[in-house]
Image (tube, rainbow, N blue to C red; front, top):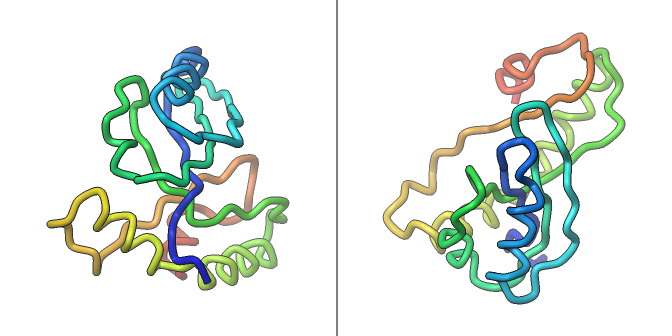
Length: 134
């Protein structure tokens, strides 16, 4: 298994997603799979980057850059959806996340993680419940 993170997203102020796309295309060699998700306050630009992740730290227009470890689509609103999410989270390759962290910030503590969850739509469980059960 390839223990590297190649999927990322850049957060941008809503309406400035195209500016982020322009910088990604102009600054990074071999950036691909660009996809924009527009939001009310912030948008996201999803992309694939297979080169040195440290290059991402030199970008100026994104509010933040995040490595994407997993995505789970089509989750139902109740308990079965929560169980499916938990099952997928347990499969995440944290070795890849540790490698990404060390490549970008060699002095960082790679033994502690913060789980960030974005739920879209209405669910009968909360982000905090998901994080607590993980």
